[in-house]
Length: 186
Image 1 (tube, one colour):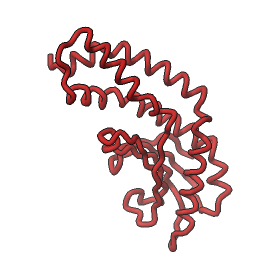
Image 2 (tube, helix red, strand yellow):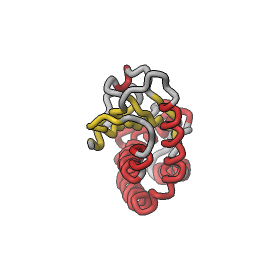
Image 3 (spheres, helix red, strand yellow):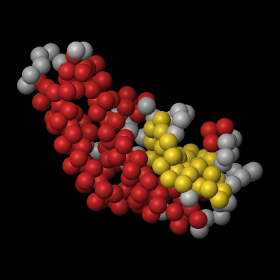
Image 4 (cartoon, one colour):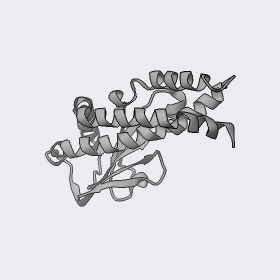
């Protein structure tokens, strides 16, 4: 068994418990993200409204920047586009940092490292980093759920704006410039 898999197995139970607690907390308190999210959404709408040849909006999306794991910025892209999605030259995008989701990630990793040091000798930085990338997948899944809840709670901001919407509006999430997954269709 490769060592990283052994490390992951050793902390998986602890991390699963941490993720369950975090998910429950965030689902109860996701409204704490709403003010910043709604400001970002309004900024996005304003930016899109300034476009010269503004078409109908079909997609609202959340993209994870894989580089944000390396930089530890945990910044995501919220965007809106017409039917051509990433090829839409009139799409608008802004950065968004969901603080409530990622503010304690370093403390969580310290707990993981403490747990690992009880069994493993000479943990390497690259091993901890690879493990962190694997474990952050759980937070990404939680963030997608929260993004959908925030969008549903803020849909009136979008519908009350001057933007023209397609009959079928879709909320998407995925890695930047990768194939996104549809979270919701209206």
